[in-house]
Image (cartoon, rainbow, N blue to C red; front, side, top):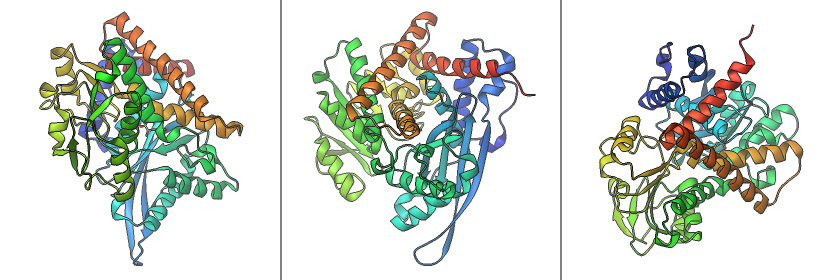
Length: 425
Ligand code: GLU
C-alpha cells in the first residue's frame, strides 16, 4: 500500500477505484515503497472558473478542471470531457488511467484529463464555442505541444478542438496544431482519428474472438453508448462481419435480433443528436442491454456501469471495455473469481486506439508531413497488436488477469522512468 493518504480534494468513488486498482497492481509487481506515492498521486491539478456570456446577455459561470497525473514520461496527454456529472475526482481517475494507457501502448507521453461541469446539449453552438475557448484561455500556461496535449472525450468533438487550437494559436501568434489532437482535418487533424478508438476496439474484438475460435459472422454484439466511440465501433464491427443486436444511448436502448441497421442509427444521431427517434429495434432498458445474451458486450459510455449487481448477470463471453473504467473494482474481482470463462479486454488496452492516433496526429503536426488513412490505420493496428502481445506475455508469465497484466505493464513503465530520472534536487 502507498503511505500517503489520498487528498480529500479528489475524493469520489471513481478516484477510489483507480487507487484500489493501482494499489493492487503495485503489490502484484512489488513496486518499491519509495516509488509508490510518486507514481500514484496526480502531479498537479488546475481548477478554473469559466464565465461566459449567454446568448440572452446574462453571464453564466462554469467550473473546469485539468489534472496532469504524470509528466515524467513526456507531455501529458488526455481528453477533455464536457458532462454535468464531471468532478475533480473523476478527472483525476481518468488522468491516472491515461498514464497507464500511454505507457502500456508505448507512447512518449504522460497522462492527463480535463473536464467541465456542463451539459453541452443545454448550450447553443455560440455558447459552446465561448466555453471551449474560455477553457483553453484559462489553461494556456499549462498547455502546449511539449507540456500537455488535450483531445476530445465524452461531450466534446472535433469542432470544439478546432476552437481551442485557434485560441491557443492566437495566443502564441501562429498556427500551433500540435497543442491539441482530434482536430478537424483542415487544421492539421489526422486521417483516421475520428474513427480510431472504435476501429481499435473492433480490431481487438476480432483478435480475441479469433483466439476464442468464434467466427465473426457468428458473433452478436451489444453496445452501450452510441457517441463517437460506440458508433464507430458498431460500424467497424459490422464491416468485419459481426451482427450488432443492441445499442443504447442516454435516451434508452434498442434490440433487434436480426441486426441493428447501424448506418440508420448513426444517421438518426447525426440529425437529432440522440437515438430517441430510432425505430429500428424494440426498446430495451440499459440493464437489459448489459445483461443480454450475446457474444460481445461493449460498454462505450461512462464509468462504473458494471457493478457488483450487474456482474453476476452478465451473459456475454467477451467484455470489451471501450469506455474508461466501466467495471467497478468489486465487480471486476467478482468476475475474476467466478467467471474464468469470460474474456475481458481492459479499458487501457481496448480503447487505446484513440490516443495512439492522437500520437500520430501530433507527430504529423510536428513534422508538417501528413499520412494517408491507410498508413494511419495500418500503424494503429500494428501498435495495438504489439501492446496486446505484451499484455498476453505478462499474463502468461505472472498468471495475472488481463486487466492486472495491462495495468502492471503501464505502471511499471511509469515507475521505471521516475526511478531513472531520480529526485530533484
Ligand atoms: N479521450 C480519449 C481517451 O480516453 C483520447 C485521449 C487522447 O487522444 O489524448 O483515451
